[in-house]
Image (cartoon, rainbow over all chains, first blue to last red; front, top):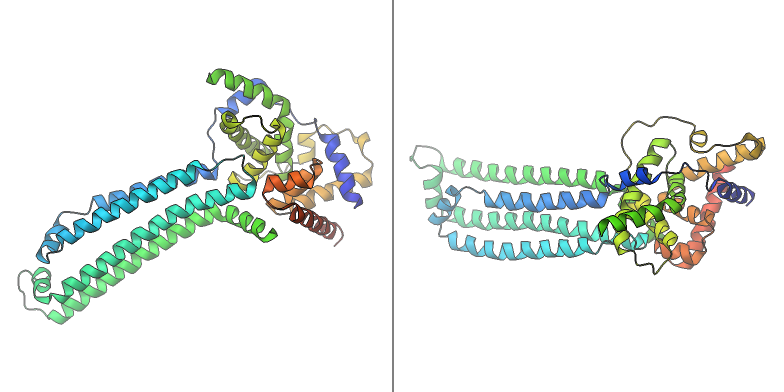
Length: 211
Length: 164
């Protein structure tokens, strides 16, 4: 191909015609902060771990009082122990994956490792959502099956209201809240993926396709 | 000592900075983006430098990190892109170096390259740097045969862009 040979010639000719940076200019650059996606993935992932930790930590105590009435508190504590063991495992996984990222790896391997690191955090978030989802489903079933206790909580002053309707509304509100939460999370991950990983995923898929 | 390492890095980098400029040349098409990418690659090189053991050549190592930064780590800034004549900003080109048709062809070539995907740009870059397929495949992490196939496809694609 003639044009490509011409280009090669031109490429060589221009080698050395770039503006050379001085020692002090380079010094300044290496003291600037990187804005690489790996750094952002790290920051966002840590923020996610912290966020979900805080969410679980700040659930008000009054909720436990409700659980007491159904004798669920011990089960809740057991589930917490299991939960935190799993969380620690996730954080450990995230840390080792992150440490394994070396910029001097081949392009494909580098991308693979970044995606793996990010996936760990995604699985963690899925896990948290599913964990809370299952927990609330189980607790809802237990609570609604003990309708007398449930009614006492929902209607403490024993007002004259339609109990069936009250049950229905409570259930509907619960379902709506779950869906809205899932919607927000879905949107959040679309945005994170859209902004941060679009280019990475596209390039990785292209390398995969080559093979 | 960090200071010693810093000094060593800057001195070595200074001698080889052309490599970084060339990566930026392939991946960006204006001065601002060029500078942004140049900066990010330089930071990545410096961050990785303590782990550089010298079992490969410094230049090979720089090619890798340069390309990895451009393909994987770098996010283009959202700043508005000024339409500057890139060639005239970056190089002092003597007009006697070119005849007109060649110059026109070259302009088209560079334009065509900028339309390629990030991976394809990497392959064409290494090709222009006269790296063999073994090196191209090792840098990108694909097999040698596939690197060859890919290069042929890029040639066809460039041809198509140039002669639609």
